[in-house]
Amino acid sequence: MNFTENALNVMTARTYKGIGRAWIAKNLSTVKSDVEIVSLLSSSGKVKSAISIEEFRRKRSVLQKILLDSAGSVDGVIALGDKDFPQHRGIVKNSEKPIFLFYRGDLSLLTENSKNIAVIGLLTPDEDIESEEKEVVAELVRSGAVIVSGLAFGCDSIAHRQALDCDGLTIAILPSPLNDVIPARNRALAGEIVEKGGLLISEYLTVAKSKMEMSARYQERDRLQALFSNSIILSASYAKNNLGNDSGSRLAMGYAKDYSIPRVVIYDMEKYVENPMFDLNRQIMREEPDVIVINSQNKALVVDRIMRLRPPRADAPSIQPRMI
Image 1 (cartoon, one colour):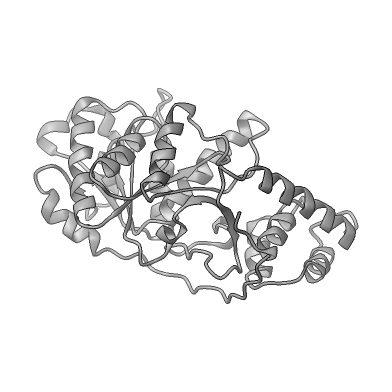
Image 2 (cartoon, rainbow, N blue to C red):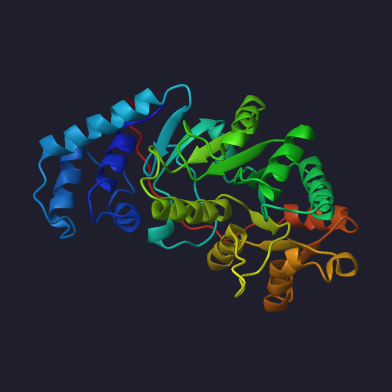
């Protein structure tokens, strides 16, 4: 199990009510001792009750035990301030920056040198969508892309599976702990991703306590798909409407826009003009007339353009590792 004392301290600080990602990004971007962190927490005005170093260390010990109990499913945790904490893509406010990640597999796939392309879409694609997506993913893998997705059913699973079948690498970003992969039916796929050199990541050590918390975790997962990709490709998705249709894909594409991550849509005017599963694709094309459009006919030319896309980069924080 790989982790630093810094990672445990960042995780522990996050457990205090009122302490969120923004506070941690502002105050713990460099390594600080537990004594320094307790002092910062006590003077923050955000934590109502008194904080002692003894209490902080007790909380840290509990988290460390839970983490160690996850050995076999988790290779380690890395946090803001650690030497190899991955730099997110795009311009992001502190409250949405990742502050620690649990991982299994090759963590180096999150570095800026990795040509990560997210491919996302709806849960119930038809055969045409599946075929189109497979062709695009195959071309991306041939060009050296690492495919990022969320391990959900439908388009996510197609993206991961096609990357593996093409001898490529893929990253699955989960809304659940790594020792409780969801959906359960994709646990074998998750294992294969790691076995073949890929990566699983999550922001969560324990399971969600409610449906509301689980729903929030799906949204947070959607943001990470944008944050660790050079661009994000929408295979297909319904648009939000008064019939109750909506999707995580809409959220992920929205995050990408907010973070200035380049967006791409799969679409063929002749084939899909009346297919409601492409409503979100068409909506994005209307809102962003110069958005990149890819399909099975132009994939070779457009993939070359996609591979050269680079989102803006925020300044990386200072680092000072201290390993346990």
